[in-house]
Image 1 (tube, rainbow, N blue to C red):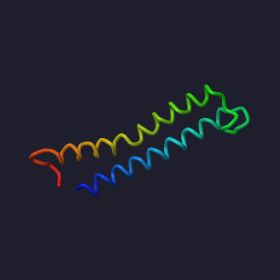
Image 2 (cartoon, rainbow, N blue to C red; image 1 turned 45 degrees about the horizontal axis):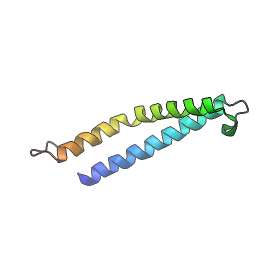
Image 3 (cartoon, rainbow, N blue to C red; image 1 turned 180 degrees about the vertical axis):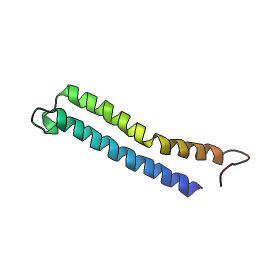
Amino acid sequence: MKTFVTRLMYLREAVGTAVYFATYESINRVFSPTGKRSDASAFVHFWAGGLAGTASWLTVFPVDLVKSRLQKDALAVNAQYR
């Protein structure tokens, strides 16, 4: 059980980070005047970060929910899952 929860945490972090950075870079490049991230304004960086965080969390929320329930169950007296 412990290794399964650890794998879920790694999966959540890997997928979440990949989605975050891919979304962040894409938004910055699309909305910059020259198509380069370095030329994007502070406003674009601000919104790209917020939207990337939202996309990341929406993507990993189901995995995080399963992981959290398994962690909670492991501490219970009568564990429901093995």
